[in-house]
Image 1 (cartoon, rainbow, N blue to C red):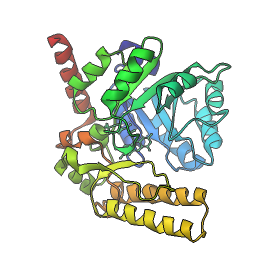
Image 2: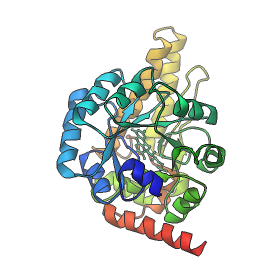
Image 3: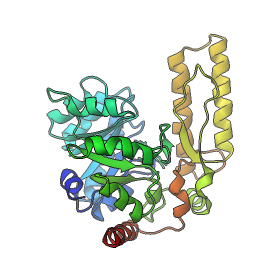
Image 4: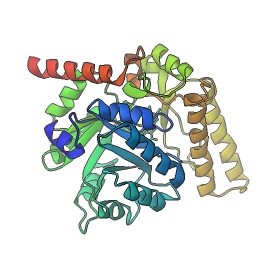
Length: 330
Ligand SMILES: Cc1cc2nc3c(=O)[nH]c(=O)nc-3n(C[C@H](O)[C@H](O)[C@H](O)COP(=O)(O)O)c2cc1C
């Protein structure tokens, strides 16, 4: 973990992955204050809102934290400028391949860039690009994770990516990690650290609605299901969330948008945007308004290991104790 911790500037190389609506100033500061690495989820925020959120987070912690930007945000470069103005130390580019010039723009103000990559070949390319365009670290995230997911399990990604990259590069592993023993396993395989989301989503410091938290405490691994794609023309990035009326509605939404495509009423780009907007609004409804029936309860399969509300320091201590005990046992 030392390499990962040095890279992040933290005590422990444990990132709390950005969770839209959940990863705001309070949770982010709590994670960083506990020795981990909090990451603000910019999501669909405007530059003005991101500016406020970063400033407020700085007011709650002196420790390093990052900002997660979604690559398809139409104002990506304005958001990068906001990060630059605040001297943000780490920017995570999520949701797709970083657009041309984005990595350079971030590195130009001295921040480190973390990226995701779905395949080993792409990971190598993103990490090795020259002329200041290479990312500084990689996050591999398996399909057990909550939120938008790829098709491959964390255990398989770890076997593909870590032996090939971990010696030379900083690689963090995410998806399905609920206990320290699992962290120990990935660290032993060469990971520089881990990223968890689901396990931290219901911490005491998380502003998620009590009803959202209750749904997590009640849920089992098998309740956190990946959304299905309905129409072959309409590629949908699967989202893992707790089953509810909202997940059914998502299927209905896809049918509705597919019909509009059939009728030629909308273009493909607009169709995909509508699908994405469905989730953005739905997550807010669940996290902020507590509408656990119709909102999106994005959660990973480790949700079964989230059983009660605990302060971030306690979750962190438990994970570290389990990790240490496991490594000593080995
Ligand atoms: C409620 C929720 C919202 C999320 N939103 C985002 C997001 O906005 N951007 C992102 O890159 N990842 C997002 N994620 C993924 C997390 O950052 C993290 O990688 C993931 O939760 C790790 O897997 P785990 O849930 O199995 O711990 C989200 C996850 C959850 C549970």
